[in-house]
Each structure stands twice: as structure tokens, then as C-alpha cells.
Image 1 (cartoon, rainbow, N blue to C red):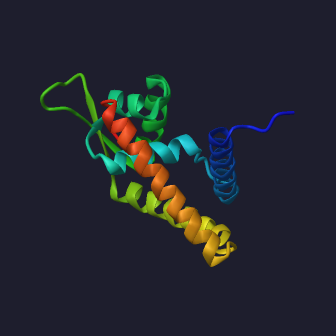
Image 2 (image 1 turned 180 degrees about the vertical axis):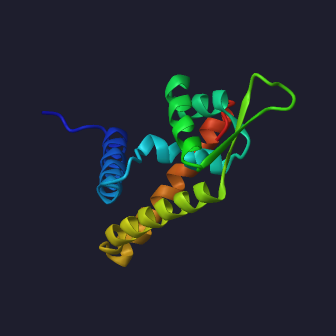
Length: 152
């Protein structure tokens, strides 16, 4: 069996680490009806208040029907407010409510605690190398994406 190339191994490792963090987060979510997709949409609405449903679906690479369904549920729970765009009544603009912000903050704190626990198990040297490497990777990927005309 041939060894994977370095870039493939890095991608595989990133995927494995991300998956493990997601799994740990979802274990903490047992008994709730929150999915990773729901949390991702909450985060995206928080990062860009008044984003449209169409733009949210495009940026998250999710079917508009799924985004609409999740947002409808979040709206019923009082976590997201929906309002027609004043300039184009066909568009629905989204914004987190105060309850939505509290819910997202709670999930962010849980995620940070899980990540800190796992990363805290690394030696200080390993943690410093990991941080340096991830910063370098982000810089390269952001530069490449921006050069291709995509929004970073």
C-alpha cells in the first residue's frame, strides 16, 4: 500500500479532528433538537445580520428548502426573526433574536470548552506548532480563495 501524499494526509487529519470535535459537541447536545446544520445557520445569521434565505443557502452550500425549513423552526422557537426586504418583498431577511444570540453563545461556549479540553492535552510545544501551522494554512487558503474571486 502506498502512503498518501502529505497534502492528502493533512486534509484527512483536519477532517478527522473536525469530525471528532463535532461528535463531542453533538454528544453534549443529546436531548435537544439541534443539529450541526442548525448551529451552522445560527452562526451564519449572527455573522451577517439581515442575510437573505437565498444567500444563506448559497453560502452554506445547502438546499434552499432545507435552509427554509430550519429557519422556519428557529423562527417558531423565537431564535431568528424573519422580515421582508424593504427593497424587494420577495426576499426574506434574517436576524438573530436576543434568545437566538443566547442560544448561539451557549453552543459556542460548549464548543470552546470541548476544544480547550482536547487541545489542553497537547504539550505546549505541540500546541504552538499546531497553532502556527493552522495560521499558515488559513493564510494560504484565504489568499488563494481571494485571488480566485471568492469571498473568504
